[in-house]
View (cartoon, rainbow, N blue to C red):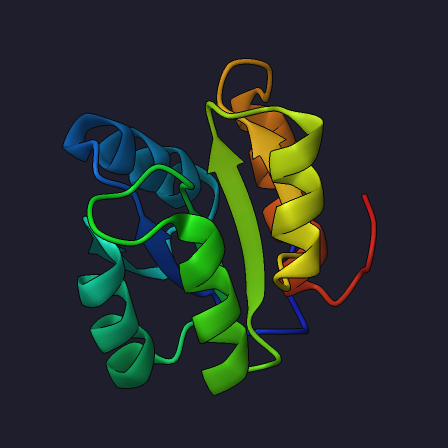
Length: 132
């Protein structure tokens, strides 16, 4: 399927290198054309946001330095149209609400979200569909 929406430029912000690598491999398995940049913390993420201008960002909440929730708000201030998916172990209502209030469009649990669900969501976002 050829995607007609965004180009597929993705930023993964996650302090766990193994998780970053696994997510990148999952994404490239279905979308080999994607350009995927990675960052281990918020400072690095903001630098890469400016440099690479991703269409889509996977962002953990629990990062060294600043919380992913704070970084979400900062990213949306700089690039209001970037799509942010919070992907975290902190699947609690208060985190979910804070994520949405700070500008994230999606909130996924690392424990319960399966690879095929992530791929379907990315495909829907890149093709311009609002919901899966």
